[in-house]
Image: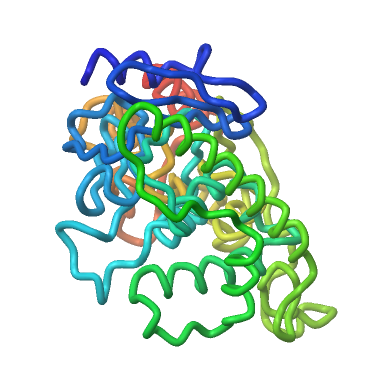
Length: 350
């Protein structure tokens, strides 16, 4: 199926902007939901390695949750190779991945059936902005995910916290009552999926501003004057802008604020009294690509390039930093130098 999937993973011509589907080889159909390319093949089950790079397999296409971060193949599943009691439903796994910085725009999504869990997962991938920090539906959508995921993972015996949300989902989203099979079923499945995602988007829009006694974004209220102990919003300043990443300075550890502002790849720096500079290189999680942080020993990484210039840099795949010398001194590199080294590593990685 490799040749077919390589074609399916090409965004050019991958369906129609209005969500209608076109046939592909192997009994599948492909479509665009918004800007998200999908391949729908009823009953498809494959190994993760069989999918092309930048693929997301949903809810049973690959049995069990799995990540191939080098090739950017992701499986969000809770059916195989897992313990159902502790493995969250697919839509919850997708939610967590998006909150941790997954950018679905380069991916093609593979689906083998349409149920509540899969339809909500596709809707989230098609509308990642729902979970942005400033989104008016962030909190309600996360509550909806909890309701759908709890029921899907544990069945009707599970007492979801907000049955009203689950009832609204069931009433508004036109889920099919049959399983797919065969080429004709693939066409119907693609159409069903498009209708379900459109209905979920309408439901999500109607949830804006709702919530059990809290702000619409699901965050904790912060009294005026930062009385809750949180730092002011303007706690960092961007000093350099690279290819998909930023350098910023702050008097404190402000990575959370940088991420909240939408920057998922960053280098934070702070001048120290002894004339050296503290640097931290980070991406929101390993799901964020295009910013090969580390480790130092791996060719092509940012930390490796910095360590080649100045020994002592270290860290892991998602975060690292400058040398820590006796007496508290850090890096002797200036911010402009660090920017040049990091930008070269990023552009070389493509």
